[in-house]
Image 1 (cartoon, one colour):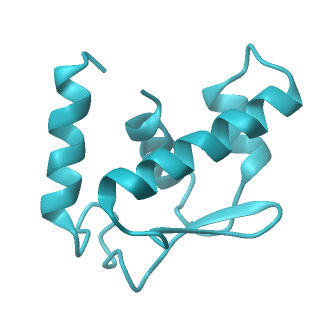
Image 2 (cartoon, rainbow, N blue to C red):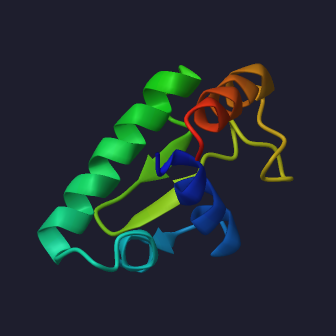
Length: 96
Protein backbone atom coordinates (compact mmCIF):
# COMPACT_ATOMS: atom_id res chain seq x y z
CA UNK A 1 0.00 0.00 0.00
CA UNK A 2 1.14 3.50 -0.80
CA UNK A 3 -0.61 5.18 2.15
CA UNK A 4 2.42 5.54 4.39
CA UNK A 5 4.60 6.44 1.43
CA UNK A 6 2.17 9.22 0.54
CA UNK A 7 2.27 10.60 4.08
CA UNK A 8 6.06 10.41 4.16
CA UNK A 9 6.42 12.22 0.84
CA UNK A 10 3.87 14.86 1.80
CA UNK A 11 5.64 15.54 5.10
CA UNK A 12 9.10 15.45 3.51
CA UNK A 13 8.00 18.08 0.99
CA UNK A 14 6.75 20.39 3.74
CA UNK A 15 3.14 19.31 4.25
CA UNK A 16 1.70 22.54 2.88
CA UNK A 17 0.74 23.32 -0.72
CA UNK A 18 2.76 20.38 -2.05
CA UNK A 19 2.46 19.93 -5.79
CA UNK A 20 0.51 16.81 -6.75
CA UNK A 21 2.86 16.47 -9.73
CA UNK A 22 5.89 16.24 -7.38
CA UNK A 23 4.14 13.66 -5.23
CA UNK A 24 3.10 11.39 -8.08
CA UNK A 25 6.51 11.68 -9.74
CA UNK A 26 8.10 10.39 -6.52
CA UNK A 27 5.57 7.65 -5.78
CA UNK A 28 4.66 6.42 -9.25
CA UNK A 29 7.58 7.43 -11.48
CA UNK A 30 7.14 4.35 -13.66
CA UNK A 31 3.56 5.31 -14.67
CA UNK A 32 2.21 7.90 -17.08
CA UNK A 33 0.47 11.10 -15.91
CA UNK A 34 -3.08 9.76 -16.05
CA UNK A 35 -2.18 6.59 -14.19
CA UNK A 36 -0.25 8.61 -11.60
CA UNK A 37 -3.20 10.88 -10.85
CA UNK A 38 -5.58 7.90 -10.69
CA UNK A 39 -3.25 6.18 -8.21
CA UNK A 40 -3.10 9.35 -6.09
CA UNK A 41 -6.90 9.66 -6.07
CA UNK A 42 -7.32 6.04 -5.01
CA UNK A 43 -4.63 6.33 -2.32
CA UNK A 44 -6.21 9.48 -0.86
CA UNK A 45 -9.62 7.79 -0.80
CA UNK A 46 -8.24 4.71 0.99
CA UNK A 47 -6.38 6.84 3.52
CA UNK A 48 -9.49 8.82 4.36
CA UNK A 49 -11.50 5.61 4.76
CA UNK A 50 -8.94 3.98 7.05
CA UNK A 51 -8.43 7.07 9.19
CA UNK A 52 -12.14 7.87 9.26
CA UNK A 53 -11.33 11.52 8.52
CA UNK A 54 -12.32 12.96 5.16
CA UNK A 55 -10.36 16.17 5.45
CA UNK A 56 -7.06 14.95 6.88
CA UNK A 57 -5.45 15.99 3.60
CA UNK A 58 -6.84 19.04 1.85
CA UNK A 59 -6.52 19.33 -1.89
CA UNK A 60 -6.79 21.88 -4.61
CA UNK A 61 -6.52 21.17 -8.32
CA UNK A 62 -2.72 21.20 -8.08
CA UNK A 63 -1.69 20.79 -4.42
CA UNK A 64 -2.11 18.74 -1.25
CA UNK A 65 -1.89 20.08 2.31
CA UNK A 66 -2.01 18.34 5.68
CA UNK A 67 -5.03 19.89 7.37
CA UNK A 68 -3.76 21.94 10.34
CA UNK A 69 -7.14 21.51 12.07
CA UNK A 70 -6.68 17.74 12.06
CA UNK A 71 -2.89 17.59 12.30
CA UNK A 72 -1.10 19.51 15.01
CA UNK A 73 2.04 21.51 14.22
CA UNK A 74 4.15 18.38 14.54
CA UNK A 75 3.05 16.47 11.41
CA UNK A 76 2.99 13.06 13.13
CA UNK A 77 0.89 14.31 16.08
CA UNK A 78 -2.50 13.63 14.52
CA UNK A 79 -5.58 14.35 16.56
CA UNK A 80 -6.67 10.91 15.40
CA UNK A 81 -3.56 9.08 16.62
CA UNK A 82 -5.44 5.87 17.40
CA UNK A 83 -6.67 5.67 13.81
CA UNK A 84 -3.20 6.35 12.47
CA UNK A 85 -1.81 3.58 14.67
CA UNK A 86 -4.49 1.26 13.28
CA UNK A 87 -3.36 2.21 9.79
CA UNK A 88 0.25 1.37 10.69
CA UNK A 89 -0.79 -2.00 12.07
CA UNK A 90 -2.76 -2.79 8.92
CA UNK A 91 0.13 -1.79 6.68
CA UNK A 92 2.71 -3.69 8.70
CA UNK A 93 0.52 -6.79 8.60
CA UNK A 94 0.62 -6.54 4.81
CA UNK A 95 4.39 -6.12 4.78
CA UNK A 96 4.50 -2.50 3.61
